[in-house]
Structure formats: C-alpha cells, structure tokens
Amino acid sequence: MNTNALTRFVRRVADIVAECNYAQRRLLALRTNPDVYRVGRGTAPDDYAEFLFRTSSALLHEPPASGRAHGRLVG
Image 1 (tube, rainbow, N blue to C red):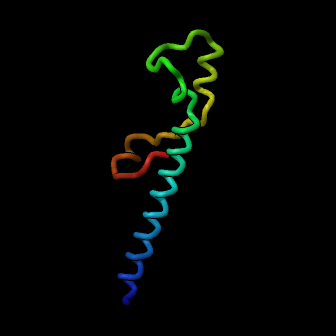
Image 2 (cartoon, rainbow, N blue to C red):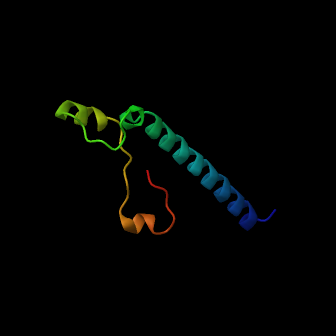
Image 3 (cartoon, one colour):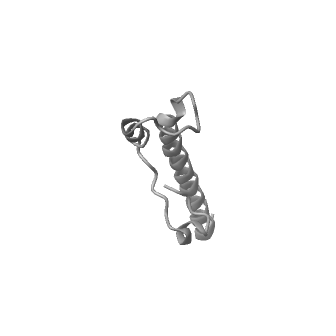
C-alpha cells in the first residue's frame, strides 16, 4: 500500500469518526431538549420561567455561513 492510499484511508476513517461524534452529540442535544416533552408543540411559553426552562438545554454552536458552505458539520 503506498503512502497516498494509506493517507486517504486514514482521512476517511477520521471523517467517519467525526461524523459519528457529531451525530451522537446532536442526538443527545435533541433528546435532552425540554421542548421535546411538551404536550402542545408550537405554542408560546406561558410565563418567563417556562421560557427559561425551554432554553436551558445546551445549544449547539452554529458556525457562520462561510464555515457551512464547504460541507462542514454544525457543532
């Protein structure tokens, strides 16, 4: 196996691991999001305390558009 093929293989494995890591973090964020367990989805919070509770989960950092333009994952 020459060096170029080995380098491509290692990069591909690293990309797969990075994508799995992203998917795991995204799934955790979605499952622990308080909005998922609400009965009346799409409704506004009744009071300020409920608003704070809904936004209390960890939010994923979204990069600027220039960072997303080349297929980079959010997070």
